[in-house]
Length: 272
Image 1 (cartoon, rainbow, N blue to C red):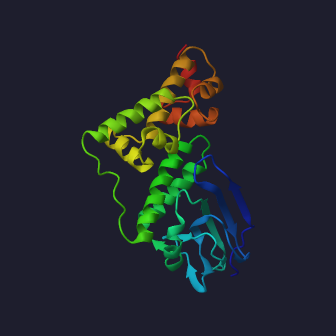
Image 2: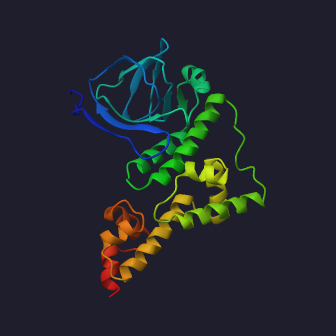
Image 3: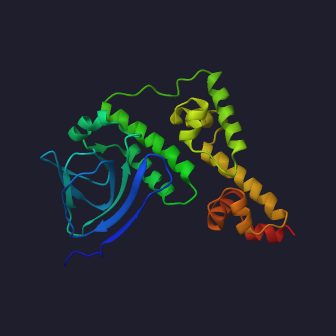
């Protein structure tokens, strides 16, 4: 029986997340990439099938539990390693996330068997595919980049959780105050790090440790609370969405239903 053939499909976009040059999702059966280079880091996971590629005259492969990181400026190719092709998700990251000093280590070990990293990269793609979830995506990317750096340097970076009992809660409180002041317009982790003089990963860990919730979850819940007040005051769901910082009405509806149990429209109708 001949292997099932899938029509090639490609989806690509550039999200509003610092450090992400491009998100690229694709399914190919017969297409083979010739030798080429990128100026960005290529972070690759394969969801179906497998890919084989050559990097620095060495052959590599990508089974399901592998995260592949191809460094910038190093030629590589790529083709299907199974008869039915492959389905992959790729992130192209700039040097603000992974420095050039890691290129040599990535050339030596581009394929990382790391179930936690694989899961985190998948979660990052899910967040990147949802407009309006840029803060969550940035948070997840921060920890993905940190773990990649740890693996490539073959030693643990200083854990940014090494914060004393006074500085951890104090930093968490300052971030909460910043989020409270920027509920509608929002704030990126990169900007928050500059304003509070702290590494983004340090911010997330301090906040989560102090309040039991990630910064992006806190901001979303604040926005839903504001949307509830607007809806009860007579605003339409679309107006409540734009007035509280959500990307659109669908974005509000997804989170509103998760946190409140009903859609904004139902909530508004039942409240009058």
